[in-house]
Image 1: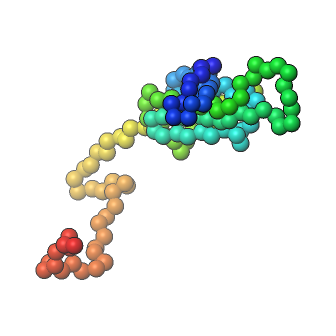
Image 2: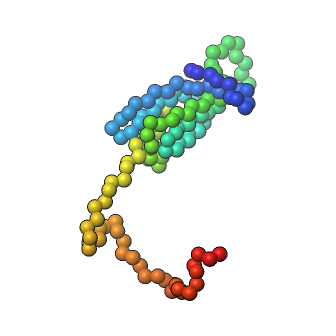
Image 3: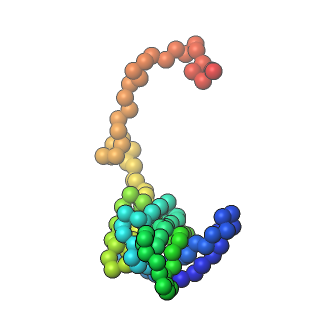
Length: 141
């Protein structure tokens, strides 16, 4: 586990270990989050980045005689090798491992257009609801 000092707060932020692999659908990312409940995780995704963070606090009312357990803020951000579809991310937390399946964003397929024929994705133009006066400039402020 890597540690770094946050430049503005001067507090330790621990970076949990991760593993990732390319799958046929996209990317599978695993993050070690031992002892953390699903509701304590904060996961944010954009098309090109993923961030997982949480805070681990000692149990209230207990005094540790000895502990190698890290407490504090944990955060890991990764730049993804390709764009993902954020609305299709699947996640699972099992045995202290957070698994995220990040589907690769599909490139739009070109559409062949045949002159004189409409395709299912093309809609017919609708007539204007409000008549437009040619004497007025519609863009004038």
